[in-house]
Length: 487
Image (cartoon, rainbow, N blue to C red; front, side):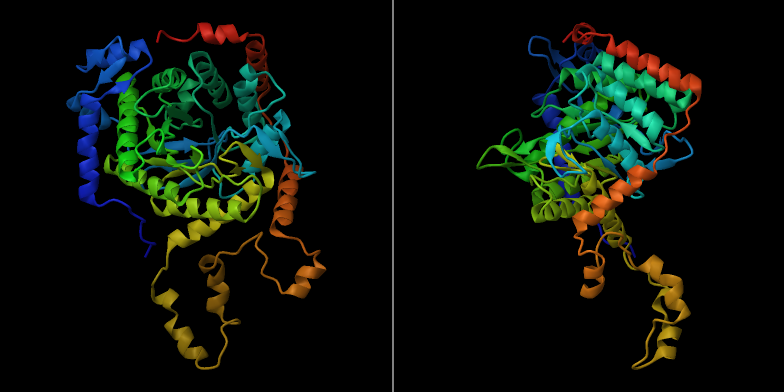
């Protein structure tokens, strides 16, 4: 049987949170920072306080539009033959975060990120077998800010066969991302049902929206592309200090955003996201590496699935500033709890320091940790073959199973075989150079990067991408600001 799900809520408690969610949305409301969305919701029958920009969601509207969100959709890669179904029963791991500093792979120095780091990161993720999606984790410091999103998509097209994504950065940038994705995939029709691009839509807790994020959500919905609506509430500061209170507030926030996506375009693929955690109450700072992050992720997955919607959760996160034991402990427990809790899209591998820093060797280690997590979740299969009764009788007391055909046939499937963790005896380890896991992961990252070859893009596609990047590079920040919708 598969390993049991980690649950933090009973069925009755889920219903209680659902009921209070409708009440909160109807009586307290959500601050909606885009005027055209407020009008849209008013037309559906929701009460709107235009002076305060508060929308009071009518329960029947919420319940009706929640049902429009699809239970399953396809995530594909830049190589469209690579596809992954996303639904409440599947699970994929991906990178995410906003790393603005980086541990240099060659020197080990901690320094600001560069465009080369971003490109290498995209290449590396393409070569890691347990990671299937790559959000733009690296924010380069050496190029203009208005070009980051288009440079990232061009690098993805040239160097990656897997899925990609970024955050929703307002009207003009989100439209750029959709247009460039369409170019990469050969036209808008080719992304309508397969979704190579998946976008984080952050929610401003408590009970509010961020204008550029909501604009991005509306554009994604117009294009029918997946939106991962994700609060980053902290229990004790931007949410009630109790985990139940945080889950209630988060549920109201996520449900409101899913309703807004469905109001624009019924059937828009979404994920019920969570990056929520507790506040470090001694400092008022975030504590993504806390044990409570995994508990919140598990509760979010239960609530998401109660609506028939897949869940995105944060994991692999740590407040550690270096790749030390804290870094390892916090990232593994959050990965394991998120996966055991049933989250379907688990992000933030390869990061540290509350996801604001990154390291290529850490991504390689995370890839191995994910393999361990997947093995644990697979559980123990019991069958006539796996029970091995005949083999057990044949070998008998004081025997040995090493040379048995049953052993040779099944050990690769039954045992997780690590690539990085050292299991040799000391003398063998010493002869091999006494390398620690971090050194081995660094070697593996360099090996993947050195073997990489750029994808052969159609010349017309490559030119169109170059032209698009050049066009955006010619824009000023004022053009992005001028394109924003009325608040």
